[in-house]
Image (cartoon, rainbow, N blue to C red):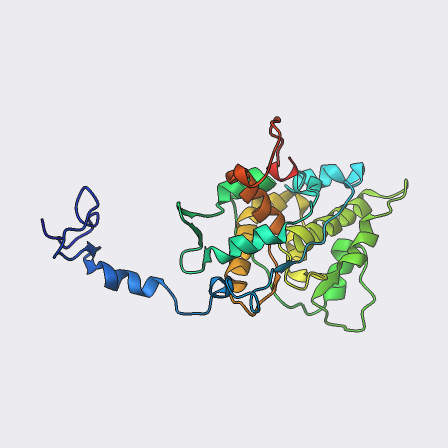
Length: 290
């Protein structure tokens, strides 16, 4: 039987392509249909077998080693970050992460393995991090007319920066806002501390950039009303940033990788348990803390 034009399995029901026939996908010859899918850009996998060119990627994670103050937890839970606040960043296995990057294809946003393709999904984000994956998109402005006023309003203070029009907050300054809470701390101050804690989580663990020394101010305006913070799809934003960083580091000239590497490593160990010896235990959510 010869190949037939149309959206049919290649070669008919048995998947075989008869000799002398042409396979079609969605009305196009298979070779033509697949040609635009594979890009000709340089890929890190090209240098995988060249020891003089290949190098293990470096990640940027700025996590918190201690749980938040108990008085902050009600506000963090209200904002939908109660579970994310409990995430403890474990030692990252950069050899494993580098191997995953080698298998990442920017054209399809999937890992290509000998057994097939797979990828991190929103379901994985919800299971691993327990972040909301439904709701409004996370969108913000990239510049502010008076960033100091915004910080005073929502964080109770502004960093002493030489620049009057700064766009990011240092993690060391944020830690000072929630690190030491006195017994006389007011409710308003606790809410400011909770916003500072969420900003630290966003920029240090969930959506860090390759530099990972600051978190962008664009997230702060979304934290103004803590009761409405959970209405945003933070999980979708985390996954989008991870996809973007995976695509970026497939360039062999790029070494530093941002994005939620804790999510990527935990996902790999959970979906491919043969990569690690994990003792049998009850699942604890978020799974990243198991």
